[in-house]
Image: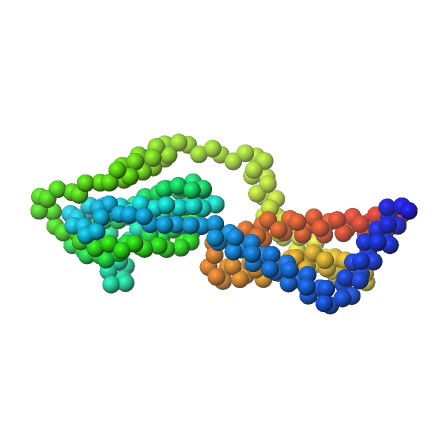
Length: 273
């Protein structure tokens, strides 16, 4: 038995039986949707941020423009930035404020620092830290309770800084002096292919659905069992405010494109046999 006859008698008959079964189609779509939702939950759970302590500790009396530092432990699969702001009775204190210009901390597990100061007399009861990605898109917020007040400088000495403040500040300054390695040509090409695969897939998918008929049109619908739930997931993640909403589309669409190209190759092989 030749390879073509094996495909026609074996694989194709299974595909045709699959599409003739509404129950099988519904089960497959449900499985794909569950996998996508689990993937989204895995990505979301990969971010873990904890505010450990402050310097000075509570209760704190600071001079005007003196910084209040927050020690941050984080675990993430992408680079992060952190900025702090004071709150009092549930309201953010945004006037007369100075905040740290946060660098992008590398992905993985590590420690970070954020600070806030005020140039006028201000009282706060907590510090809110906003977690951003490398492009300053907010991911989540964390808060830590602290009683702190900024007063006029009457000759009082500033509060001593904790050891981790100097250590993390030195690490931050040292990392800013290290030039970032530029992307290679292959990296840039790979990223471009990921982006271009999305319009390429949909243009080709719609063209085949319009051009083909009968059983070949049914075969061309196979990638839709992945791409349609993928679009639904992407819209859901976008509406939920996730900054990771395009990732699944970028990584899975090339697979559906390859599947569609494989179906085209199979049809051409059948036509030449």
